[in-house]
Every structure is written in structure tokens, then in C-alpha cells.
Length: 414
Image (tube, rainbow, N blue to C red; front, side, top):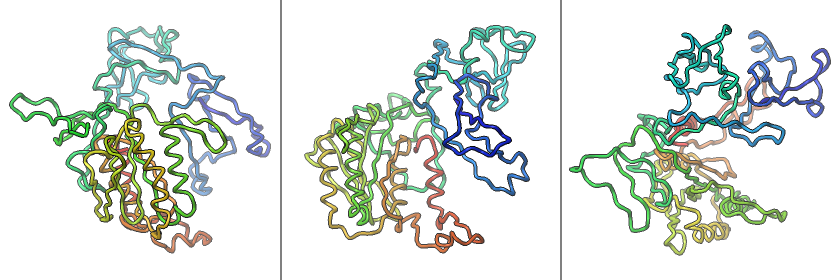
């Protein structure tokens, strides 16, 4: 689906509020998808270099459908699954081309030619289109949903570990609640090998410390909330508002305007809480505890995870512990005098906690990080924005943010 601005190109560009938009439904040809504004953008590389106009695009996968849109069609190929490219694993779509009298198709993503199974074969017409194309939704619509089996070929592939990661890799990732699907363990071993690690007394399933397998079974995503408890965050009310927002997202409730808010986290996910200023504060949220147990890590240059269990918990099983913690945290830090934070250290321990598991980090940050990895001290480049000869540049003296970004973009880390 795309939006196209409509106006006379020979007149001055209209104001943004006066642009009429035409909506394109899924399945239209690629040539009918246009940028949202037609304002005479440079059409040559010379003009583009001279004008230096920044361009960007905002994409929202799996966005909610507009009421005027047609529903997304569902295509079921049975146990064999939909045809996929042998090289890049792209799915068959309206923009792939058919060759060898219909027995092979060229992937429009990588150009690789893949064989067509006997169950999916169709002869071609004089225009090199499949004869059955009018009856194939996946060859007509730009957006379809495929029904697939729970086969390992659809599981995420574990990326190789960097030689020098930006975090300290634990011997095994923190444990997930036993009620949540556990990550895959090592392949089955012979009967003479040591048995798998049993359940721990606290009700958490121990994970294998052997190297991870090549693929990772889809599991509900762990969510880790990291909250800034510096003086600026507490005095401004930002910290209290952050705790209230987390409670609303976990269990729902009534907001300040009297509106009913439903829980926003997906079913079956696990959550964890981390606070930080000039040190890191981890919380054991195990459901058998009367209140959360806090562990403080003061080594922010080489931080580590002090918990083996209780870091990630089921929000419903540990509801009383989580509610008590989030309601009491603002009072605990009410008189704090610490004004510095170590956000880079938070990213390091988060990557260590979510490695081989995947997950989501939500940071509530109110001040500039000035301690630990990636400390952003005052730099001349940050105060010279009015000087055209000295534009603002990204200040990353020890490349900590760049390394953390590379580690975070891996499928098994973020």
C-alpha cells in the first residue's frame, strides 16, 4: 500500500495540509507506488550531490489495515509450504519471472533461478506468464499471508559470535520462566553422555551451557525495562511516570484522562527490570519472593549479570513482586544526589542477557550518559552547530555505540 500526492507539477508545491492523497491497495504494480510528496526532487546524481537533500522512508511492517482496504488474502500450500528461492529464501511473488517453459523462476530479490515443483508447475502463455496466474493470489497481490508448518527451516539462524563482542558473554543466558517456551538446547546426545540439566528448585528451567544450535525456535520475546534513576530523572518526575507507564503496559488500568488501557505486551512474554545511575541495579523477580531482591554492580567498565534466575519472569506469576517494586522505586530514589548515568554499560549487560535468546530493550533515559563505555562528555563538535564550516558530527570516542549497534542488529540479540 502506498500514498501518492496529487497536484499540478507546473504550479508551486502545495502546503502539506493541502495535499490530496490517493491510497493504493496491496497488489498494485510497483510502478504505481509513489513517494508521498512530488516536489521536483533531483533527477540526476549531479543535482543530488549539489542540493544535498536528505531523504528517508518510514516503513511499518504488519501495520493495521485501514477500513477501506481489502483484507490480506491467506494462501495455504499445504505441508510443502510456499515456493521459496533456493539462495535467499525469498517467497514467490508477482515480480518474479518464469523461465524454462515454467519449470524455473527467477527471484526478483537476488536473481537466482529456482526449480518449480511438480505440484506448482503451470505452462506459460505467449507473454511468459503462467496460465494459472489469474487464480494465484500470491502472483497477483503484493501482500499475502502464507500458512506454514512449524518446521525448523523457518526458524531464525543463529549468527556467529564476534571475536571481540561489546559485552561479556555469560556461560549460559539468564533463565526464562519455565512456563515460557525455552530456547532450543543442544542437539540430542548419545545415552552415554551426561543428562540434561533438570529443573531448579525456584521453578526455572536450566539451559544447556553447550554451544547454541544453528537455529533458534521462535519464542515469546523477553522484554527488559531499563530506567534512569539519576537526580534529573527523579526530580523532574520522569522516573515516576516511567514506572506508572510500565505498570499500565503490563497489567492495564485507568490513565489520567479516565480511559481504560489494556495490557500491551504479548501473551507469554517474560519481563525484567533494571535501574541505573553510576551503577547497575538488577532485580530478582522470582515469584516465590515476598519482594524483589536487588543486586548492585558497581563495575560499569566491565559489567556482568549477577543473576542466574529471576532476571526474566512471567509478569502474571510475579505480579505482586513487580507491582510492589515499581510502586516503591520512586520513593527509594527520592533523595538521590547522583547526577551521572552509564547507558553504555546498560547496553553491554542487555546484550549479554539477550544473547542466544533475542529480546527487546526499552530504555527510559533522562540524562546524557557520562560514565562507562560510550560516555558522551562535552565535545567542541556539539557546540558548533551555528558554524557552517564545522557541522555537528557523531561523537563516539571509543566506538562503543557503533559496536553495540552492530551487536544489537543481530537476529539473536535484538
